[in-house]
Amino acid sequence: MSEFLRSRVDAFKYAFAGWWYVIRTQRNAWIHAVASILVITVSIFLQLDRYDWVFIFIAIAFVWTAEFLNTAIELVVDLAIQEHHPLAKASKDVGAAAVLIAAITAAIIGVIILGPPLLEKLQGMF
Image (tube, rainbow, N blue to C red; front, side):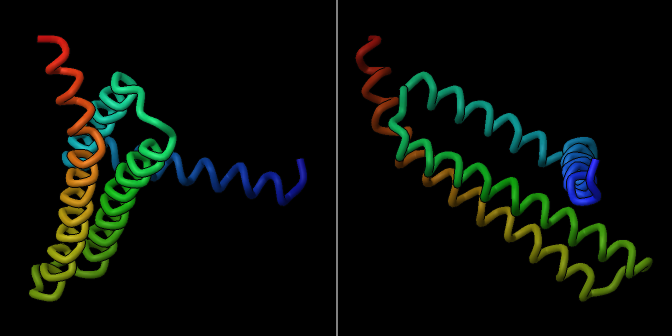
């Protein structure tokens, strides 16, 4: 295997190791996982068109990316600062705020895209 190909394989290994670390260690990652699965399931049920799927996947990716970056910030701060420090707390709070903004934005996108067809489908069932 060429050095280039080996380095690409290794890069994927490291990325999946990071993903698994977040899933194993971050409680909120489980909330994101359940929400992602629920939204994808509802989207399949509603048979969304491909443009709606694009926004759904971007919203999901936005939340996961924020969660991963927040975890990275927390780990680096914990490594650099062994005691409590106001700037360390502020750094972690800002990272958490980024996740909150992403989650709220994703929820709004979900309501806009999934709300009307879900209500229509549910009304048709009763």
